[in-house]
Length: 334
Image 1 (tube, one colour):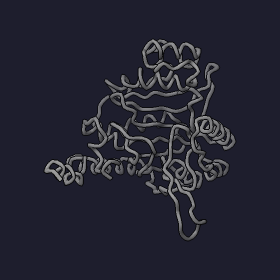
Image 2: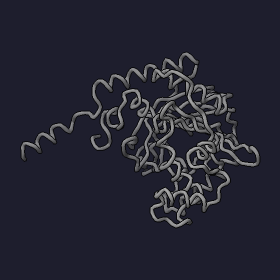
Image 3: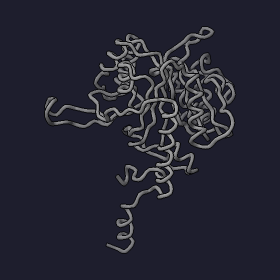
Image 4: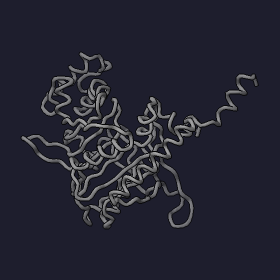
């Protein structure tokens, strides 16, 4: 082995985060717990392993196998993509407002902002809607990042009109496709290569997101109903809107919040739509989330919830551009 090779192997044990950033993470974790304690929001822990996982076609789960007492041999279990389902079960059981700091896992996600294992802060506030929750998310981020001044807020429609001069709710599919072609981001796709939401997502990620929250953090709210996930839907001026928001800071998505869906029948319908999309995409079909269905049938309280990427928050505080600089051992070194 050459001296250069010995150096490279011997250094591989070292963390990618500096000791300074490891200490910063610890301080921000403590500050987070103090924030929620002051608001009487209960910290909870839920399992990382689950018998089922989300149906969302955009999220891919890790699967493992359990062999031992209590379950059939070789039982498949999923590593959670978020603690959402378990936390909603607690809400339905009467927990009141709750939060959790935990690991979450998503297959196929690695890059400047992503590691397949990451830290998530998720919280649910009883009797909040997504607008009231935005106020609290703003207070939390201001507190953790020592920011001053109110965050900006703009509807999904407004940002498309501002950046691309088109209405995302009413523009024909051909207009979305032509916008992507003219911006040279269509990758020679024909118009039928993507769904309407696919074209909206392409325009959003390539032409809008990099410019969001550059001067001041920005909440984008009221997405198309087709992008509701597990958020409630309302009709406004004849247009169906998903009551959810995303928070952007310096072009990076930091948080995703919902005015939570409470209708068990609607949940079943949305899961079925996801399954159809997964089949069409050749994706695995995960086991159904029957426990969430049962929790909604038992009665989920009126509430709003948000998931925030804690590693990204540390990145913003440390003013670094790569997630590896704020986590000890990314997947390549785990």
